[in-house]
Each structure stands twice: as C-alpha cells, then as structure tokens.
Length: 479
Ligand code: SF4
Image (cartoon, rainbow, N blue to C red; front, side, top):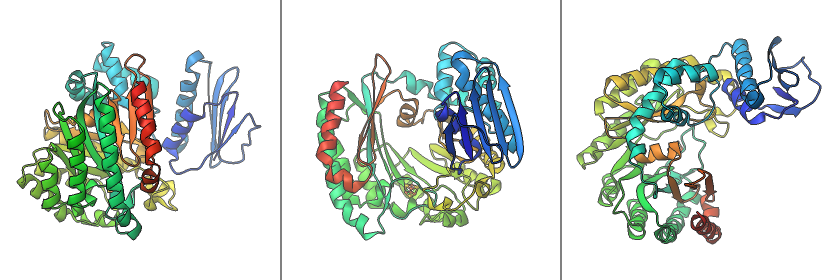
C-alpha cells in the first residue's frame, strides 16, 4: 500500500494508525508526489485544509477538516482512523490512541483533578477511545497509586537479562537463543562469567552514585534455562555487589515449566527472591503444542505446586490471548484454571503479530484477523479476574497486537509488582545488566529520559564488554 504525504511529513504517528488496520503490511512512503488512485493508497495532505483520502480495493473515502494549528498531526490521525475504520469495518477499542503507556495519560489527568467521567469523555472525544478501555486504564491507575506514592526519588531498579530458552516459541520475536543448539549451549558459561563481571562493575558504579536499590528483576529469555549452578553464580554476584538492605522486591522470571526443578527453585529462594513467574501462556495442551512450548498444562501445574510447596507466596502467571488454536471458551477456561490456583498475579497479554516470529512467516492479516474473538477473550478474562478479586495494576500496549489490544497485569490486593509499575510508568531509573538490557535514566529536573542499550546478542556482548561498561559508567556519572 502506498502512503503519500502532501505538504507534511507526519509519518511516525500516521504509520502507527495504519498499522492498527494492516499490521503485516509493508507500506511504501512518498512525499509530495502526484497521487495515483488506481492502486491501494492513502493520501495525507496539509494545505489550505487537512485532508485524508484512502483507496482500498476500489473503494475511495475522503475526509477533510479546517487546519488545527499545533494539533494538525492529531487531526490527520483522527481522519485517517475514521477513513480506515469506515472502509475496513474495523473499530479498534483503543481508537487512534497509539502510545504504549495509556495509564500515564490517565495519571496526568487525575493529577489535574479530573473525575473518571471527565477523563473517559475527554479521551473518547480526542482519540475515539471506547468506554471499556477508559475504565480499565482508570482502574489500573487507581491500583498503582500506592506504589507510585511510595516511590523514593533516589531509588533505582536493577534488571538482569539471561537471553536463553530451551526451545523457541513460534510467536517469539525476542533475541533469545535456544539451548538446544550446540553454539548457544557453548556460549552460556562465558556469558554467565561476563554477566557476573558486569554485575560487579555495575555494582561499583552504583555504589558511588548516591542511589538506593529498590527492586531487582531477573528476566529473559528464560533465566531458569541455565543450570542451577549458573543461576546461583548470577544471584550470588548480585548479592555480593549490590546493597540489598533497602530492596522491596526481587523477581525472577522462572518462565517455562520445562526449565523449573527443585534445585533451581532452591537457588532462587535461598538468594531471597520475593516473587517468581511461572508462565503457562495457555492451559490448553493443543494450543501449547501449536506454539512450540515444550511443556504441557499438567507440567505447569506440577511446577506451580512445587513452587508453592517450597514457600513461594508471590507467583505471577502469564497468559496470551489470540494464540493459534485457541478460542473464547478455551481462553476463558485457562483464566478460570489459573484463578482456581490462586496466584498473586495473572497477566493477560495479547498476541503480537511480528514478521520475525516463525508463526507469522508468510501469513497475511486475514490469517490473524479474529480481532473480535480476541477482544472478547481479553474482556472475558478481565471480567472473570475482577469478579475473583483481582485488580489491573499495570498495563501497556505494543505495536501490532491483534486488534490493537493491550497487555494487563492483574493482582490480588496489595500484591502489585513494583518493578512492572515503575518500568511502565517510566518513573524510576532502571540499570540493566546482560545482553539486550536497556538502562534508562530520568533527569529529575527536566524529566528527560536517557537510554543506553547493551549489545543485543550474547557473542557481541561478550566480545565488546569493556567498551560497553565504560560508556555505562560515563552515563550514570553524568546524571
Ligand atoms: S519463553 Fe519467551 S523468550 Fe523464550 S522463546 Fe518463548 S516467548 Fe521467546
């Protein structure tokens, strides 16, 4: 599809709107060229007026509006959204609100003293946001208020990344290496060694920074894909090089049931982790097979029971709505099955359609166009969780999720994950160690965020280690 800009170059936001309707489409962008209306195209124009014209499968729709000064870009997005919605019949629940952190907007409006009705009305008018999503975001803002109120300005969180997994899930687009390959297996000992070195170097940088460690998160990949001995080395390094005396939360993403055993859980417990994730994604074995998870629902149940029997009293379980072979009834059965287990957190993700994931290779939008079904799954999960006493506590959106839907973490009262809230609301510095980790520092006066990315792949992380840590030190020292 060709996208033509006349008198403007508002590509970033308008492309995000186009992606809501055509997540797998590769667009061709052009600027100030004569339009050709004999192919599928959109013409986005700023002249004496604002106009958007969309041609799709021989149907042509035009929208126009007077100039809006500083809001021209938003108005063009709104018109593009209306034109595409009219022509495709798709009405995304989040309207043309495309940012990944909608709760930030709600928090800002609450800080101005607006009521829920005023917030919902404002966002509905401005972005075509539907009532169900306004309410979900509002409830999330209320649940996370206490965590935001108790945040100390000089605190930070530590993220430690272990980018290895046992097998690759077919929907995965992360840079994670499967340990079934000899090359990745051989890389792990050296990776763990360098990670421990980075933890040590980062600990010394942070000791001199005047900041206090608040939360720790070991994520992946699947951190428990490495051996108990290697995990012990990583967690020992954290203990040795960071002052954990003020730490309020320590999470480890145990992740997949096929990586969890008593030895690894003992390591996690003995090092004082307060929260783990064990992620079934689905409790339907057929669905798990479809996505290449090397475990069954029964094995997830066993891993969960083992963790409970060993005293883990704060467990998160992840699910994904929209997986191949799943439907409304089966997804709701997954949520009911999890509620019966009574984990402290249940996270409901929406499947993200990414070309780099094997599941979507050669797929067209139509193959994953069950937006309505997935929307019902997400809403059905939310209402079951609310009824069971869970509340939404953090929420984010990603590009290219089916139906442009969200990911929401639900928790039992008082069991919000602080790390998840702070990272999503961008209100606390995050210091990252490990391949693919991203350090994020916020200037307390200007609010300006500086990001620093570690090398993405383990082999470059290992080979360019010195350069990477030197830069990290400069960055932390300069803030
Ligand atoms: S467990 Fe997560 S990181 Fe690993 S392959 Fe599956 S989706 Fe990717």
